[in-house]
Length: 254
Length: 254
DNA sequence: ATGTCTTTGTGAACGCGTGCACAAAGATGG
DNA sequence: CCATCTTTGTGCACGCGTTCACAAAGACAT
Image (cartoon, rainbow over all chains, first blue to last red; front, side, top):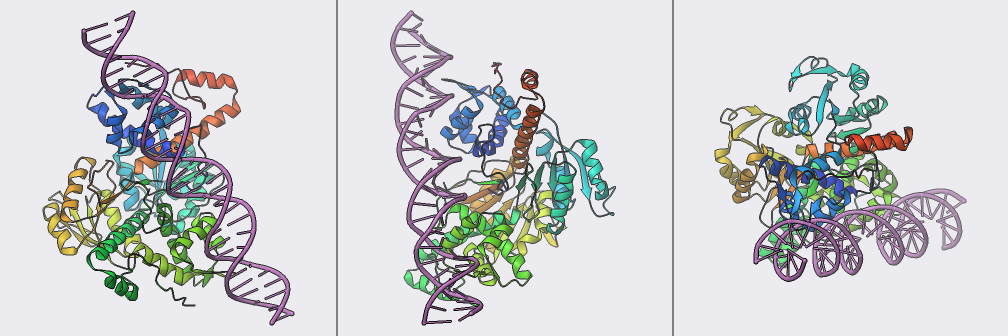
C-alpha cells in the first residue's frame, strides 16, 4: 500500500468498511475491462481472479453495497459498473487542480485514468512565473497567485499537491482555506489539516523502501540457505550485510 | 493507501509485522529531518507527531527492532537513523531499472528521494526506438531489446514498471525471467508473478477515487444537514445525487 | 545515596478484516 | 412442477494491528 489514510481512524463511512472502499476501484477497473469485451455477466470467482482478490472477500464487499448478484448466475457487468461508479461518486464531475507542475505534475496532467473516471483537470498551477502560460497536456499553466480564485470559480474540492516538500504545507493551507476538502499529496511530507479535510498520500520512495526490505530479507535467507552458521556470524560482524536473524549487539554511540 | 501488497498474505517477515515495515520509511524521513537540524535525541511523543502516528504505535514498532531507546530521555536520532536504514536494507546499494519512459517514468528518474535512500537508477528502458539514446535525468534511455542484458550486467533485482497497461504483464514477465525479484508497478493492471517475487502497486487513479468517495459522502451529509428528508427523497429519485443513506430501489436492467 | 520525575517497553483488551464453509436462492432442464 | 446444479450472501472463528495503561528503567537533582 503506497498510501495510507492520514486522518480519520478507520471510521466506516456509511456502513462501508474502508478496506472495501479501497477495493472498489479495483473491481471497477476489472468490470470496465469486461464491459469493453461485451461480457454480460461474471461470477464472483472470475471477477475476483481478474481483480486479484479472494472471491469470498469480493462477495462480502459487494454485500455492503446491496444484493446486486443473481444466485446461480453471477453479477450483471453493466449494472455493477453503474452501482460501483455511483457508490464511489464517479457519476458526477470532479474538477481537480494540480499544484506544482514539475515532472510528476505533468505526468498526472497527462494521465488518462482521470478523465475516464469523472475527474477533470480544471487547472494546473505553479509558483514559477516562467511556467505560467505554458501548455501542459493541452492546458495552460497558471501562476499560483490566482489559486484561490481558480478554486472558487471552478468549484474545486479536490486538490493534488506535486510540489517540492518544502512548500507543500503552505500550498495545502491555501488550498484548504480556499475551500478544498480532499487532498492527494505526493510531496514527502506529513500535512496537517483541520478536521473535515481528507488527505491521502502517495509516496514513491516509501514503496521502494518496503521492496528493499523484502529484497534484503530474501537475499539473507538465500545466503543462510547456502552457507551455514559461519556466514551468519561473519555477516553479523560486518554489521552491514546483516545476518538474517539480525539483532546485532547494538553499541549505543552517544 | 495508494498501494497494497499483492502477494504474500501479511506474513510477518523476520518477526517484524508488515504494518510496521510500512511505517519505518516514515520514521526514517522524520528522523532524517531531525538529524539535519542536529537534534541529538527525540522522544516517542515528538517523533510520533512528526511522523503523523500514535506514539504508542511508534514505541511498539521500535520494540520489534530492539530496545534502542533510553528511558527518561528518548531515542538517539543518529543511532536510530542507522538502525532503521540497516533494517530496511538502505545501507546497501540497490540498482533499479525503470521500464517505460513516458511522463511518469521521467518523473521517477528525476525524483530525488531515490538516490538519497540507497537507490540508484541503473538504466532507463523504453520500447520506442525514438527514445533510445535520449537523455532523461542525465541517463541515456536504452531500447528494451537489451533488457535482459542490462539487468544481468548491473545485478538489478528491483524493477519499476511505468509502461502503458497493455504491455505491463509482458514487461513484468521479461523482468522476472531476467532475474528481477521485486517489482513496483505503476501500470493499472493486476500483474501475476511466480512465488518469490514481490509486487507492490501504486495506482494514481485509485487514490483519487477513494477521495471522491469520501468527498461525496461529505457533500451528502451536508445536504442532509441543510435540507430535511425531502431533499433525501428527491436525491434518491434523481438517482445521481444519491441520498446519503443510499440503497436506491435497484432496478435490474438485464 | 536516595528520591523524584520523565519516558520507554510491553501485557492485555479490543476491534477490524479475512477467509472458511454452508445454507438459501434461483436458474435450468426434463 | 419438480429435481438438480450453480453461485450468491453471510454467520462464524481466527488472527493481525491498534490502543490503553502501567510497571520498569534510568536520568537528574539534591
